[in-house]
Image (cartoon, rainbow over all chains, first blue to last red; front, side, top):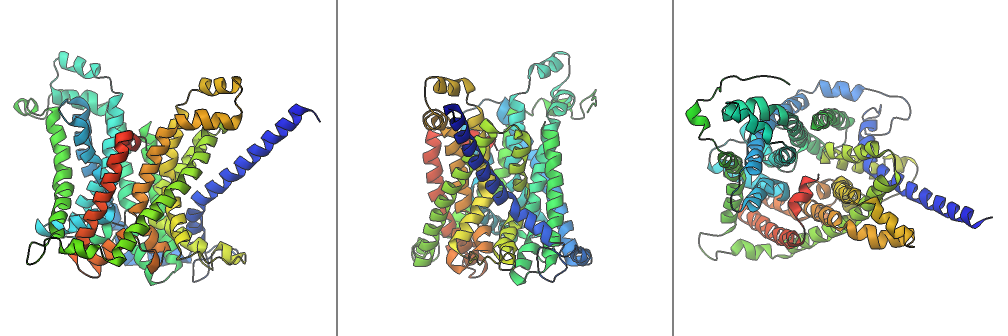
Length: 265
Length: 281
């Protein structure tokens, strides 16, 4: 056997080993979600892999449960409203920070990212105590404002990175041709950054839809969200209805995220 | 998308007054009103302005259970970070230098990020449980409600956050640099150790900081996969607030934890720009 052949074989072995490690890491990443989805189709009364045929009885159970459907509705309303607020405030901040020059700019922009860094447990407690003081009631108002705070950093980062590559000459041209700043914004700036706004909206939607830790402090009776319902069901006993609800949540989140990626490019 | 606005819907005297600085003020104002103020009020609530000592709650926060929870949070955070960096580096290295299906594989890394934490922890709970797939195969694993389960859960949750910055920094390395190292006689491992690794340090640091911040502050990981002996600081804060109704103590714990974390971030920020790292996500 030649020397090159043995080197080639050693390199093949190494590549094989790397590939095995890779497969293991991907399995580690993806198996938990796959297990949740698979076991939602069980015919048993507890979450189990359905080896002997698929059953959708737990989905029937889910769609007959008014409390769970109500939670889905709440999550939907909260995520939509919070994302709209985040897009408005996140975009305003991003445009301002990219265009304006002022002292301590870098330090000030860190404030926009703080909600990402502080543990959501602390955010949740701080918000519900503060809302009590300034008379914002728990439930929808608290959830919508709270989720908009948790999601605004994502919109800020997305829109800011889009604006950095923005050709400002286009705006100058519009101004020179006689348009005022609002007309310029509507005709020039908005169409160019709208993909980033849509991407920001859907990313906010995904983050809000899945948020649990801060949310648990902000809900009121009758305004429970899907993650809160899942958590409660995990504590009270495993029935495959949790899996059906989780699977519905996964589908909604993945669709929203795919839309976000579609608009991002 | 094409739409043409010929006349401004906003009166001229107003448009001329909205400057970019006002836009900054609007964004910062929103976050200040509903985030910075609430956090500052939490600091006020942690202090005892009634009778007795001002730092009463802080004295109680030095009690055994809470110190244990702090130590546990930082240890779990550290172990999770190390584990995640190793996995993420192997994955990112493969994506940048070996694979020719980068888009697909990168999407598969990002997909879990779109799925709520609670569902991924629930999946691991099912996976580790005696009725799960491993149990069906007759494997007896007693992982559930142990430290190992919590750390594996945290690593699972935050791995994508580590892959992205490392992938970006590896991707930015010019292939000529690597070729030069090989031409000059360095083997594959020496090239990795002396060329690739040093050039990807910014990505590793960013990934490490992000994972460490997220992991130490996790509530759901230990709540779903751990038992009473795996409670981390977020769990103790929540329990003190929701079950013991001790707002002062919960606030004091939150303040101590945040100060420790901010000190840590500031130290790293001196070496590496964290904003850039977060922007890479």
